[in-house]
Image (cartoon, rainbow, N blue to C red; front, side, top):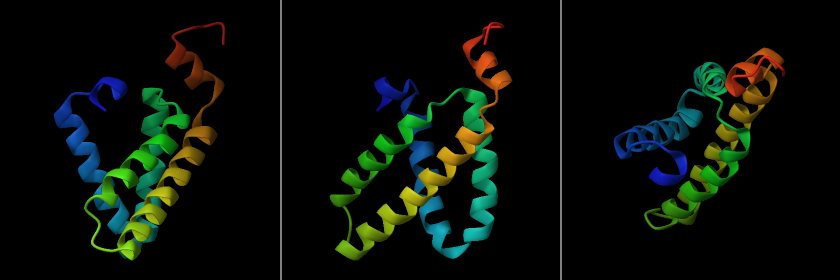
Length: 111
């Protein structure tokens, strides 16, 4: 993951910790989490994160969780909440990607 996402290992650990917290928050505080995901999605736009990375990230996280899940129900709950979080983020990224933001991320005035 560190080579593919071009982030240092401590940053990836932080991201995984946040992902696990968000999957629980989706059940405990869904309205608050959706609000936070809007802001997080816009930060992803600012960083130029391609939305096509969300799906593989979810698949990889679920694959890793298979090895530690206490039951099939727990794994399905994790998969469902993480998939929903991913879809919300992808929607925010797609809707928040204006022409200006795409040009800034590409560092080009021609777009």
